[in-house]
Structures are given as C-alpha cells and as structure tokens.
Length: 114
Length: 112
Image (cartoon, rainbow over all chains, first blue to last red; front, side):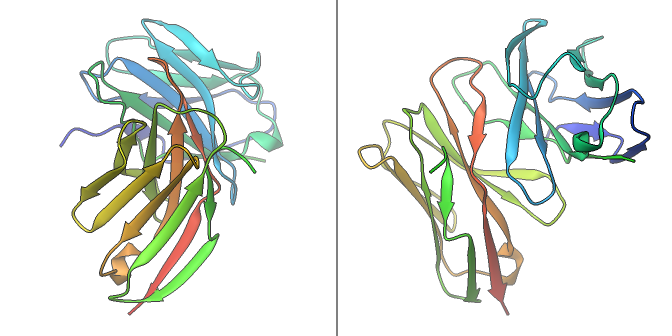
C-alpha cells in the first residue's frame, strides 16, 4: 500500500542553523500539508500546498519557514534559522484529488534544536 | 473548549471491553476524522465521517456524528492490548485545501 515517507527520522541541530525536512507524498496525490506536534501537545497545522503554491498557512508558519516541491516527488519544509521552540515532531501529509478527504500522514521527523 | 476537543483525556480498560471516546468541536465542518498514534510514532488514519453522515463502521470501529451537538464518538469494540495508543479527532472545514484541526487526544490503555 502506498505511504508517505519522511526523512530524516530524527534531526538534531544547533539553534540558528537551517534545516530541511523532506517528505515524499503518495505519488498520485496533489494536496500536501505540514503539521507539527510539540512533545505532549496536540498536532498543529502549519501549511497546505497545492498546484505549486501555498494555499493556506498558520500563524506558526512565519518568514522563517518555507516549503517547496522541487521535483515531481519531494515536498520539503525549510526552517531558515531554528529556535529552541521549533523542537517538535514534524508530520507531512498528502491527499489525492478525488472526493476523498482523507489525509495520509508520514511517520514524522523529530527535530531537536539545541 | 477548543475545536476538536476529546474526552476523556485518558481511559484505561480491560482487554475485551469496549472503549468509547468523545470529541466536541465548535465550528461547522465538512468532515471529521479519527487518527491513532502509537507512542512517538506517526498518525494512522482510522475513519472519516462526513457532515451529512450519522454513523460509520469499519471493523471493530464505530463512529457517530451529531452535527446539532457538534460532537462525535469513536467506539472500539472488543478492545485488544494492541489498541493501546493515543486517539485524536480532527475536523476539516469546507474547502478543497482544508486543513485538519486536531484535538489534544485521548490516551487509551488496554490492560491484558
């Protein structure tokens, strides 16, 4: 069964460094999302992406964040200058273009900012 | 309360018993989805119910939706130790790109 994959599974970085989190959505899906979950808290929406542009973003998704679909398969989240409070689990999700609204999530990348 | 708020926050039952988890929300929705998360792992989609549906079944799962009360319930019948996980409800508003708004989750422990 097709699934969303994410790399790396765990990323440790120093405060102020740039990180890129990578996702490979399910191949025929057209809607892409990033969410994050700070330890012990609920999953929060960051951004949605469709037709090569951001369709919606949350207050969390400030100028330090960007997303890109550099080719036909990858979907990336970049944090330009990480802060301690960016430490969280980051989930990528995708959805196809049919009438189904189910979002399929990847296993997540745990980002630790020191 | 927040959009997609579950109760109870924690539930401990014996294997074989049924587990009922509730979710309330505040705004109009297009659909409501339930996800499971094993400790430190990803989110696994369980079931989706649309705003014009009242009940859906999938295996041992039964979900109901009451849009007049803005609430949903997830019933897991004949629970197993492997059902131990956190369960989240997530609501989606109308719109093609609609984001999911998650609740804080319910921690279910099933004792063998």
